Length: 286
Image (cartoon, rainbow, N blue to C red; front, side, top):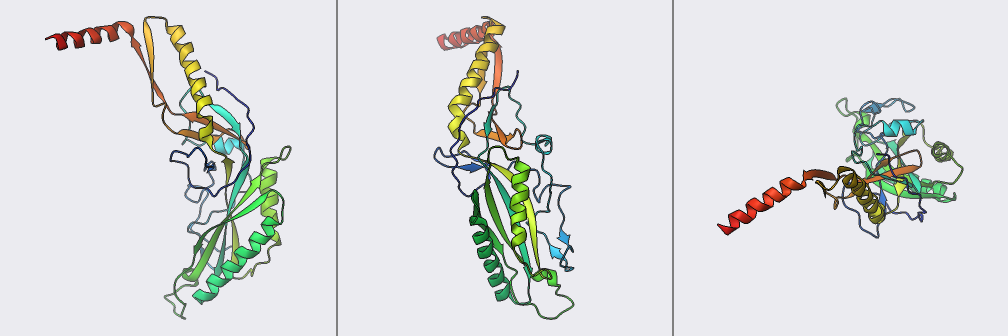
């Protein structure tokens, strides 16, 4: 059966993301991790970098930059694929772009103060632009002050600050252009190139409260089940299960999200059901 496409208007609201593997509250906003370009994904990650700084920099929790993100990349992923015949397609309201900035210094205090100062500068730069919003993330500060020792490498004292930029999806502007323009904006930030590095991270689609589409999705599912039942005739019944599961999502395109509920169904002969019912009544009578 073909997916059911239902257009809708979504009000743009923002909230800091948490991965969406749990059920969503009806009043909350959810940001779905829909990009394959995660630091944990094989093929697009590395453990360290010598680029720019000439100092080996650990990239734990820091993503490598992927400049071209297409719908084909997103849809070819083997995970998170619907196996149900009914889906809804909804427009995303924004993109979330993750970044990390690294800084090295022998002194822990200087590392912390410098990264915090960079985050303030980035926030001011981002929020000066219409349609962009800054959200700070984890601040990873290597503990202790470095003493000159061949056993203590500089990389062990490199610290990271993570942050996210939310960018509205404007009509008529391709998603990759929004990503490119947002990353280009950060080029205005003057970094101490010898000890500082800015890393581009994964790009994700933002959808406000997908659970609000549950009634619409259930209605489409029951319509599909009724068509199946009509095709089977009166001698069979169709029994669905799992319809109370969470609303799941994945990319449909660079700006759209597919929503579905992972449910199962059982087709039973009415005669089998009546036979089991008769056996139960017989056992009760004895």
